[in-house]
Amino acid sequence: MDAYTLPIEIASKTMSTPSIDILQKLLSFKSVTRQSNMDLILYVKDILANCGIDSQIIQDETGTKANLFASVGPRDVPGIILSGHTDVVPVEGQAWTKPPFEATFEGGNIYGRGSADMKGFIACAIHAMTQASQMELKRPLQLALSYDEEVGCIGVRRLIDVLEAAPVRPFACLIGEPTDMVIATGHKGKTFLKGCCFGLEGHSALAPNAVNAIHLACDMISSIREMQQAVQESGARDAAYDIPYTTLHVGTIKGGKALNIVPNLCEFDFEIRNLAADDPMKMVEQLRERGEQVAQRSRAIFPKARVDVEVLNSYPGLESDESDEGFQFLAQLAETSNRVKVAFGTEGGLFASRLSVPVAVCGPGSITHAHKPDEFVSIEQLGKCDAMMQKLLGVLQK
Image 1 (tube, one colour):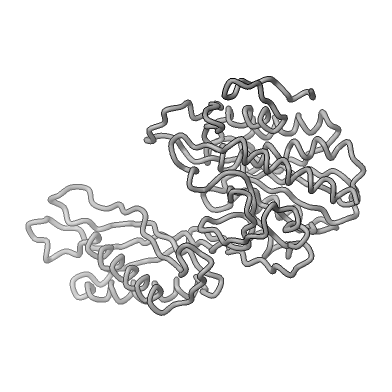
Image 2: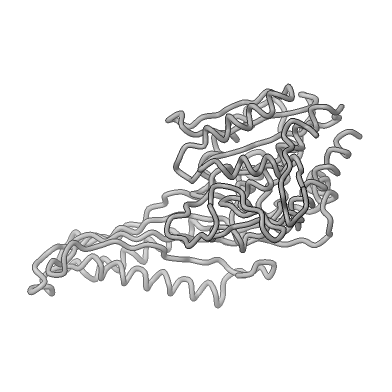
């Protein structure tokens, strides 16, 4: 029994694995996006240090959040990166029946926020790193942990800056998002946008003499929906996705101060999730043209009426080349030859576009259990992930 193994009672059986024990601890960290993840990062750093593995900590500008990068094996050979994000989505407003920030074992599952997305994979990856420290590897095994992935893959960009400047680029990257341990070859890109509608305030009794910013927003949102309809009917398609076309979605809207005041400002947040065949920036330009048309209709009353479309953030999609040597290296580790594309985004597109590194997405658990109350990963799935890691370690020694 190693230093991280403690007995756990599961379904009347004493069961423990190093990965499960590490996951228990990871779930106890309230590493909700936009909050500090430093306690978690330092915990991982200590585990690795106890095995003689040095970690590079790459902090944000506030020093309250950080990425971690560690490597085991030869320094002059391209390595295999195991990549995961440490942040989790909030639990407020959700009807949890189990404590969200501690591990609950029930029915062969481990419950807790982040168990599927994606601390289960991180636990298996950390354990693999500790094992690798005792092996003679021909190709290095590397661990990359990031922050603020859930709000646009923000933290990993600083980590990629470091890897981009390194003398040796990675050979391949495995992103451990929950895929039920099936290799995913792609996902859509995402662009985060804000619409800002500027009108002319006035007394609601004289509403026709003012320009209602909420009405401008409604017209603009209607135009976004028209674009979505056109894309759905005649745009690019990829049948490998559950939704086989690019989507536009409005998520929040805010405007108005009181019922008897015509509002002069209304803002709404929306997104584009694009197929590789669609250029989201071209769509943004088309939306700006539509915004100008919406505003123009009100300028006889208020010449300064305006609809702005601002890009807040974006990350590229992933379209892996299955014939690439690095991808094939990762694909051989999978239990099944099935391939999928996933609806959610990952940092994989950034690794691929900025480092020209082959990427596969594969990890324990299901995305259908993520971001919900009573999120869980099955012990069976964790076992399959550990088995993949054992296979990887075997290949890295050859």
